[in-house]
Length: 312
Image (cartoon, rainbow, N blue to C red; front, side):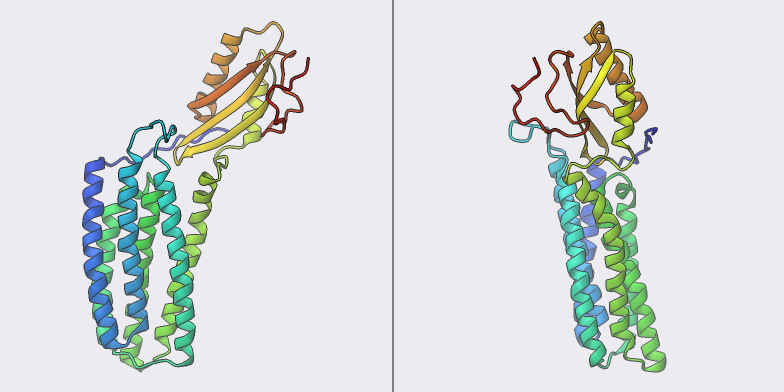
């Protein structure tokens, strides 16, 4: 299976930090305005949108901190570096979205049973302001979201909030025109469902990285087969394929050499194959002879827990 070489849209770190900081500031200001307007108008949908917007601001703070941490170089306590800080931040933000969605759903159901009066004009005006701010925020971090799962989570927070504002505007307009009070909790439930749908699609790849799963763009069986077919290779086993970060795939494997194979040539050929065919630039290969191969070795993963136990 050929490796897809992605073209990443890098943004200067300092410029990116300034964009995120600006987005944080406008979102905190908007949250305050929305909460006040929601209390005055009695609109659950507007308060719900404000709470979601607060989560956007917090998600941006988390994303900002993770960006700074991820740039730290590797050290003795973190020998792989700090790059996964952004993946952890993404998981936190997606988890927060899920919790908020269930909360909004519960509140929406309660309001369906007893829909309150809502001053639609306040809802429409403030939600329109929120839509403008959410759109500006999303544009500020859009380019960064293409290259970072961390910023993608923060971007989705704001994109979904913008969609929520559109739904609130529609709901407020219907209240103004037809006094249909049920539209407020219905809109709230729609926002909750939309959040859950998007988050469910995005959280899986984040968990996969943290669980050391192989990248979805590569089939481990294909990598194993092509490595094993290389001249001078008798067998490949104990292979592990995982993502160190969102854009860096790593591999380790034990390579059993043919009797007359050159260890240096086989290792160089395998390294070249992994880079050119699969885009794997970080690989660790342990070379073995047929008389010194691992016992009970699995092609993928490992089963022999005693490293000194070898076939004679």
